[in-house]
Structures are given as structure tokens and as C-alpha cells.
Length: 425
Image (cartoon, rainbow, N blue to C red; front, side, top):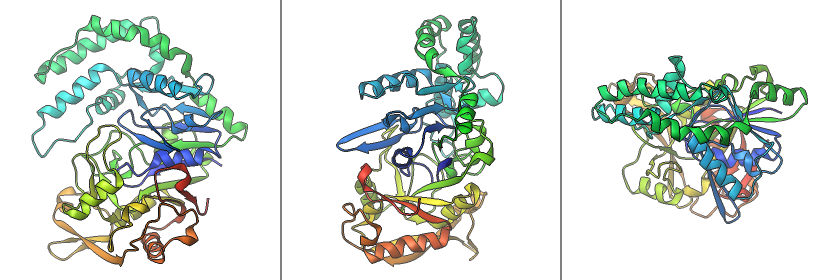
């Protein structure tokens, strides 16, 4: 069975943990978009692993892991991460592969990212991580990007010089410091030898696995509400982290996909700028942040927290065709006497949106419409059987499923592997 796993909110839903859980029944794990601005956290026993580019499946011996063509890969971030994975005791040779068609995030992309964000006026800042993701995707679409396969070319270092000189023109116009082309050449020379053993035609590799009836898991970064087309534009990432991106980001036909699993927290969080209808600015929001450890795995930034939003849940279900839900962090809500679900956005004139509006100015004029349910006020993190959950917790989950559609597949009640409850998948 070939599975696409996507985030259904604004990211940080717990995809890394769910991917780790699903990898047990998969042969190959493919990262199909995004870059090192992602952060997937997996807890195994008393060890915590954080991965940014390498698919979480690398933590399972014998599983093959692929960085697909839809990824924008910072080679130095990847090199550091590969060294870290090996230091953890996991073998890379023969089971880690990089698409020769993947785009590279170069040092000048990082410089441009920071320079462009710096000149945006307050209120118009994107909240970028500054890791060069946006400029790398812009270079890809503009047809002047650098692909991983370029390191195979004898004139690769000449391409580096050319691109640095072109980037300096833009940096100069933004009032930023220029880069030294020869320093960049020295920087990138050792990178070629370090990554060369992993570069391959991953489209061919994946189709060989399909022909051999192997099971493939497609791992998305970020989430639906950060999608360049379907998210809260312009406060979005630069790729398609929705289910359709799994095909364009890997070279696999939609006909090869058997199911789509969506991941949602049982509350909502967001990092950076942009609209967030259910955001809390009170003690409840701070309690969610502290109980949930809501600080970015990549940036360390505190996440904005709010009640569960069924409007975006239903929106994500439709866009992705989600068959099963992996619902996470139920335990964070254990102490709340009342839990709330947003079912719509009410405009000042009384009109209620029950679908997510594309016009962010209209959204800014709205306030959330809530249903309130009684909390369960007891610890759930020790529970290993769904039947043992408090009745009010079950009612909360069932009401969410009624509102968003799809079936419950996985429920997480804590950060560790053993706190993941398999329901229907």
C-alpha cells in the first residue's frame, strides 16, 4: 500500500512521529517537497531525534529513504544532518538517495531571503525562517536554479561563480552585503565529494520499487494551510505540501497512491506571520504552549496556539482527499474543563463562513464561532487502548470527525512511539 501523509493545519502537527509509526509497514520513505525549514521530531524511548531534510524512516534499519525532486535541499544542512544520523548509529550507505532533479538551496539564496524580508514593511513580513527556501523555489520557477545533478558537471564551480555574481546584483539593490564568488567556490568544492555517492535517478528507483510491489510512504513537510496555492497566501511556504505535491515532487503517478492520511493536532498552532482565526492570547493559549512544548523544532520560536478549527480541517480533507486522520496531542488538553471547536467564521454583518475564504482581508473581519464541549480533566498519556479513553475525550474526537469528514486512523496521546494508538489503519 502506497500512502501520502500530509499536515492539515499550519504545520507542526506531529507528522514526524506519525511517519515513524507508519514506516514500520513501508519499504521506502520519500520526502517530496520543502526544505530544511521543516522539523520532524521523533521520540524513541528516552531519545529525541529531530530531522529537517532526511526522511524520518532513516530511524528504521533497512528502510530506503529518498529526497525527491520536489525538495529544495541545502547541501550543508544535509551534510550536517547525515553526520548526525550516522552518529546516532544508523547506516546510510545503500539506503539513502537524493534525486538528481532536486533543487539546491545555495548560500546566496539564504542571503537573498534575509535581505528581502528585511526590506518588507511591518505588517507585510512573511515570517520566513531565512533559510533560503523561497528564493530557491523562485530560482527553480525562473529556470535559473541549481539542481543536485549539476554537481556531476565538470563546470559546476563556474556555475557557482556565475550565480554568485548575479545574486550580488540583487543583494546590492536591497542594500545587503555582497558575497565573494571565490569564497563560495572554496566552500562548495568539498560538498561535491560528500554528496556524490547518494545522487541518483530516484524516479527510476521508485518505479523499480513499485514494480517489485514495495510499499512507499510519501512524507510531506509544512502543511495544507501553508500551501502556495491553497494556504493563507502570501503567508505561505513556496511549495505544495498537499497530497498532489507527492506526485509532482517524486515522479509517481496519482494512480499509484492508495490512501491519504492527514495529521492534525487536537488544537491549532502556527509559527510566524499570517492569519489565525482561533488564536488565543490568554492563559488557555499559554497553557497549550507549555503543555504541548510548542516551540519550533527548526527555529525555536514559540508557536501561536488556539482552539481546534474544524473549518480548516474540512478544507484540508477536501483538498487532499484524506481517507484517515492521525490526530495528535490529545494529552495536551487533559487539564481543560471546557474544550472548544471552531465551526465557522462570523463576519460583522452576521454572515458566517463555513468554508475557508481566500480573501484574507475578509477573514480579518471575522471572529470564530465556537461549540463548547466538557473536558475530561484526567491524564490520557498512559492509555494504550482507545476504548479506555474518557468518554468526554471520545465525544470531542467524534464531534471533530463529524465536522471534518474522514475516519480516525491513528490517535497520539504523547510524544513517544508507544503512545501512538492504531485505530483503523
